[in-house]
Amino acid sequence: MDVQAFKQRILPVQGRLFRLAKLFLRNREEAEDALQEVLMRLWTNRQELDTYHSVEALAVRMIRNLCLDKLKAHSRQKMDDAANMLEITAEGVSPYRQVELTDSADLMRRLMDELPDQQKLILHLRDVEEYSFEEIEQATGLSVNNIRVILSRARQRLREGYVKANNYEAGY
Image 1 (cartoon, one colour):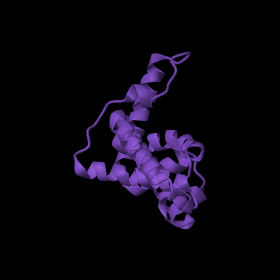
Image 2 (cartoon, helix red, strand yellow):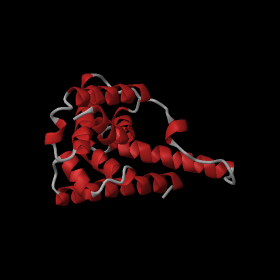
Image 3 (cartoon, helix red, strand yellow):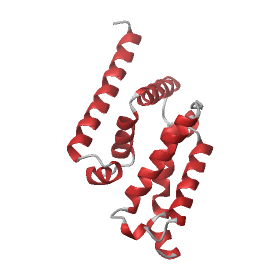
Image 4 (cartoon, rainbow, N blue to C red):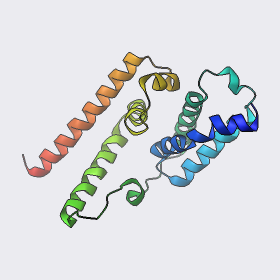
């Protein structure tokens, strides 16, 4: 693979790879480092990339594995990145509603953090990155039926946790 082909096939997906790395690592700098490392590995092995059916799926798998390795190697640093993660515009929204939306977003982030890694990954790829089931199948090696089950369970867990937290806060 030459430089031009690499730029056309790899560089357009680096935004998705970065968001995925940030989902796992919750730290912008570490996510950037992970992305850089994966891009370097892909560049180093660019001659073999033509043998893969989907280079994007390979890159997703590489970033996922690298992030999981980083998480295992050291304890995860929590970072309050609400300003970057929460995109609420203040125009026409009352301060009370803003607080409510911020609290809901924080609750959803906490609930997502509690999901098993596989459910978190599938949910992110499908609902945030909007990958098709076939693309997720290529990236994870799971069957489409498995992906559907995992996605359904992840959504159900989020729904139950959200309802439980809001009912508890209401005093029911």
